[in-house]
Length: 320
Image (cartoon, rainbow, N blue to C red):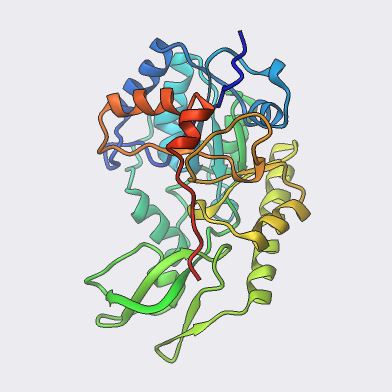
C-alpha cells in the first residue's frame, strides 16, 4: 500500500576498492543489507516521475544507488557485485576523463588507486586510466542495464574564499594543482568548492583574484551542455540527469541546468525525496567507510519517510 509519507532514499558511493575507505567486501555487505531489508533499487527516471507526482511507478520500499565519477574500480568491483544481487544503479560520469582504452577485464591486474590519486593524475597529468573508458560506460548501460549520466566535463574546482587556510603541502587537496596551475611549497591555499556554484577566486601573481559571475555562467553552460552532448552521442540515449560537483549549486547554476535540458540533478543535501519535491536538488546519503553497517540501516529507514527525512535534513548553504 502506498504511504502518503513515502520518501525515496538515495545513497551515494564513489570509489570501491582495497585502497578506498569502502572495500569490495564492505560494499557487498551493504548490498546484502539492502536485499535483506527488502529494498528495491529503482532508476533515476522512476525517482523523477515519482517526485513529479506519479505514485504508480514506485515499489513498496524503493531505493536509488548512485556512484560519482565512474572510477575504474566501479567497473571491476561494483558492477559484478550489483549483478550478483540483481540490482541496478546510477553512475555519473566526468566526460572529460573518458578515454578510448579497450574494455578492461574485471579481473584486471591494473592497480586501483585512491580517489584522490585518480583525480590528481587526471587533472594534472592527463592520465585517465583510473576512470572508466567509453566502451566500459557503453557496456555499463547496454550490457548490464544501469544508467550513466553527467558529472560535468572536468569536475571544475575553485578557491571559494580569499582567506588562507594553510600552506602547501602542509594542507593538501587533490584539486590544488589544477586550481593554481603551478603550486610550490609554502604557497598559501584556501578552502575549495565547485567552480559551478561559487564565483570563487583564482590565483594571479600569487594572490587570490575574484572571478566574475559572467565567467562562471559561461563555464556552467560548457560543463553541463558539453557533458550531456558527449554522453548522448556515446550512449545513444537522453542524458537527463546531473550530479552536482561536490553536491553544490546556486540559483545561477540551477537556471543553467534547466536551460541545458536536464530533468533533474543530485546533490548531497539531506532531506525528503517525496512527491512534489524539487527534482533539481535530489537529496542523497553519502556513504562513508567509517560508519558501521547499522548506520546505513538506520539512515535508509529514516529517509524512507518524508517526515523523518525532512526533520533530519541538511541543506547545502552557499557561502559567498
